[in-house]
Image (cartoon, rainbow, N blue to C red; front, side, top):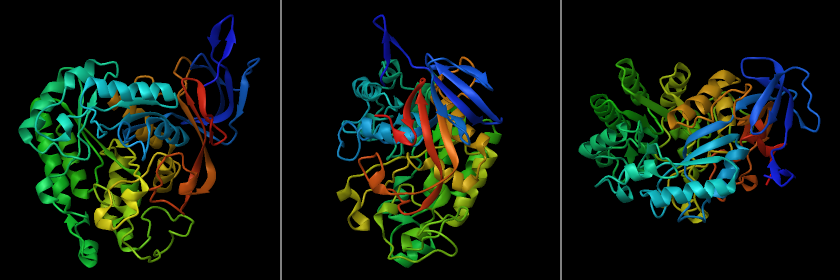
Length: 459
């Protein structure tokens, strides 16, 4: 970000955000200076401040993503920390947690510090690395959890995402280890012996298409096991990308017993179903305009690898249960599982395609399509709670005097048709191509400085 200079010292610019509708209130002005919100009220004025007209816009605390794949180091052809950070800022995010399945794996202090420093150099969002639970994600021995926690990156969440920590003894040891510094183990819940060769959700559609099924119980069994282990140890467990109605019930029971467990759901598991794999482009949320939505849906050719994801898209009944659990608070967080892939990894036969979808630039719009304009709920699930889980104390805070100015301005009246070619990500594997989604990110502020203005990246 450019800064003016006075007497050799850098001076952070002052911004007057005029007429924004703060969550839970009416239109108001926000004065931002020195990286914080300094004043909130009506008719504010500040000589020399840059005025941002926010009439009709909603001011949210900057969004926080607990589950982002930035691919660097190792797969810079698919994404870099800088390109992923830019996509995040355009999606309204001010902080993202970067998953460990890079090459080399982020299983040492050196690698997590590299990712952390790349995030600081990009300066577009706060990048908080997630460390691997096991060396090389191999599930055989614990990684350097303590060294990563003590590093400059101050890692507090550990995950082998993409792989399940399947060994219960190893999972117990990990939970015991991180308890000492109030860390979190984020589990990719998948019993690998039940998903060998799996290509999509096991059910009517997989049978019709002739694809090996990924049964819901493979997720539910691991979650049930892990909440028991977390309860026994008294440690913090986080469940990545919850996808089934049965998982919701396991989680509900665990929370009722006071287990220290949280869970996330992705936008795509809230909106899309396994029917889309067979070519039926039916959305389960409110009707959206566009060629891939509406009514009973349209039938395409099917087997489009852009819809291949792990865990797989589930049934309409599962999606409905996930939405209800999100509203109820059984599911704590919406996380993108932003998973960019190079063209050759997606433009191939279904069986050979890598699982994963882009998510950062469309997540808020998808959630608006699912929940409508329930701004306080959106702020809670996409900002306040994920910031609290990750220990990001400067994020997830509603604008008030003295609060760090990590803010997102949203135009709820806008509609946009998703064009993969216009995305900031280096990859193009969005499942929403051609869909018209509600809402538009107009501005994003990180520590008082704009990373996005008028819907465009500042740099």
